[in-house]
Image (cartoon, rainbow, N blue to C red; front, side, top):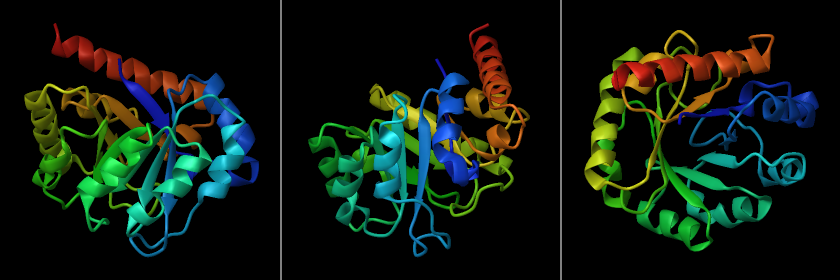
Amino acid sequence: MIKIAPSILSCDLSRLADEVKLLEKGGADGLHLDIMDGVFVPNLTIGPLVIKALRSKTKLPFDSHLMIVDPEQHIQDYLEAGSDIITVHAEATKNLRQAIDKIKKAGVKAGVSVKPGTAPEIIESVLKKVDLILVMTVEPGFGGQNFMPALLPKIKTVRQMIDRQKNKIELGVDGGISAKNVAQVVAAGASFIVAGSYVFKSGDVTAAIQCLRAKADEAITQIFK
């Protein structure tokens, strides 16, 4: 089953708790929380205090996507805030295995993300440890960017890497996902869809999530036809 985790980066932050409730009622499988430090990426967003405040507002799993330098120094803060998955960037940490081990030791799921220009081979050393691999299909740091179709072969490559491991690893794709391209992304091997602008700019959160899911399910049907 394809999981859909809307990114709250594109929501109305002045009514964040209400937006989260809309996503829960609309059928989201989780929330994608974009954490930016203004160093690894040019923008600044939310931190552990906001995540902790949201934790009591929903039962949806929280995927905290740490787009920050030296994430291993801050993992404990995001654990205590209530994250269910903590995803770190392979390019941002001095010791990827150590960062993943710290997350796993705490008993939550660990993810690793790669930027568009990063070769997927950089994550091979942690494939047996992670629960999620997140392929970025835009440059991290800003919402509302266009999906890069040239990265579809990379998604397929990561899918092949996962299948060779025979581990239960989610393959996530984040960046410019919409009803126009979600089928291609799923056909390439994705099982975890992050969508922000498409969901929140649609005018109907529930309808947008349902549309993404329907097109993703159709793509899966075609694969196994």
